[in-house]
Image (cartoon, rainbow, N blue to C red; front, top):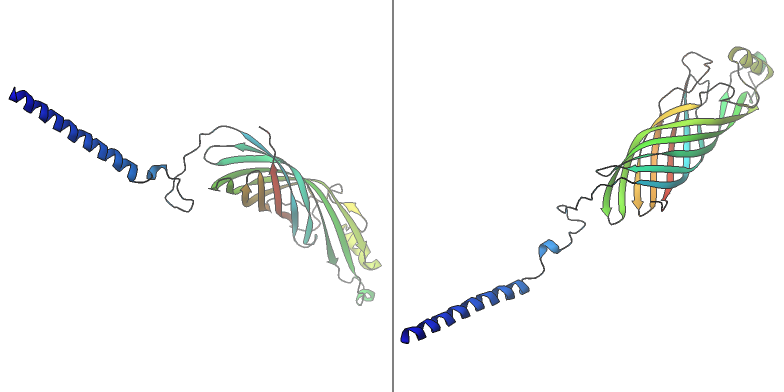
Length: 269
């Protein structure tokens, strides 16, 4: 009988000890503070790692408008160097790729206007003291731009992204109307027309077969994106000589472009 009582007392004491230890564990878990693994990492923490989103193919459609500046860079001065200022308007299509890459194409219409002045030397003794021996050009250029870009996007914070891009662009000239203000003396005008085929009246440089309509460029650029809005800037380097009929040996003309544009992503899925 005494042995049974001793066993009952030992069993009760051991059960009480196990219950006390379990209670300490539970209370310690409640009082040690928030779990560090559930705290959202700080944006400025360089060790933070965002979960990689699963890739799904998608397309994005954007309206684009902005300012453009075309620079016609010549060699041998048969065409004068000239800056043309204007605007662009069109639509782009982005194909979403893995690892934050995307490919873009589209169609943009650009129109730009510029002026230049071409000085000619005197062709006769009577022209030595002429102060108006020059040609002034007023050029209006209409083109279609077809970009073929590769974008890389960097997520900064929530819907704020930074992006960079590169790739070729095809410019298709529609018209390059040239209004000529002829201030040459009669002797100089005759000499320029006879020896160089110089146009002294209004004409179109594409339709007159002076320039090729196709201009291949390579571009670099970047910008920022917030939600469905983008602000970007870039530069396109002209790769091919667009002179079609050379008036002098090794005549060259390249057209480079600089632009700033605003884009809006359409809510199309």
